Image (cartoon, rainbow, N blue to C red; front, side, top):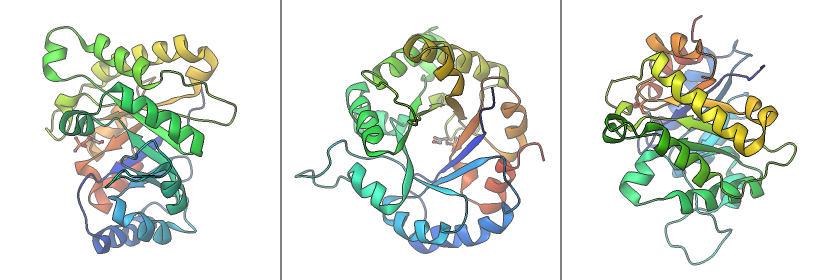
Length: 252
Ligand code: 13P
């Protein structure tokens, strides 16, 4: 299908500005020969500008971890789509399970954010995934399907617009428990069918679906070999340049 692999580092609430820039300085030489993989780093907000500068001249892109849907106004503590564009963000992670779990984000907010990102020309990375309880009760597809439909409500992709989906089973995040490649593929394939229902087969076939949840250099290759796994959204193993570069070079 020709989907370019996409590997994203989500640093969550980790790294000072100096640590973020220090990472970039060590990381860029490690991936300088990599041409067939898209790479993005999502540092905390205050490191966006310095990391953006440090990435200049490289093909590694900048991503934000969240944003508000309004362009400006009285929203204390929030950051707008335009501000992220201004900082050089090409992507924004939206609806991460930690946002849903700790900050009460629901599909309604996530959908507004997705629409606002597209409007601003930022590519949304929409995160979906079931909890362990939902999986145990046979509700994985219900949950993931509902989050996809909810997060993409009213989205019409115009030509040149792109979205990324990230399947992150909540029980695999930061736990060291990775979904088996087959378990992940089963949900990715379901998600692609759901995308086909929304956007049609052609568009759904071009949308990259990332897997997230305890991805490491040791398991990246086999996950990436699955038909509908097009990349990885990496937390813990993206914190060290060597380890993240090992994931970017999956299988090499
Ligand atoms: P871990 O890679 O630490 O499991 O985190 C996954 C994640 O939440 C990335 O967004």
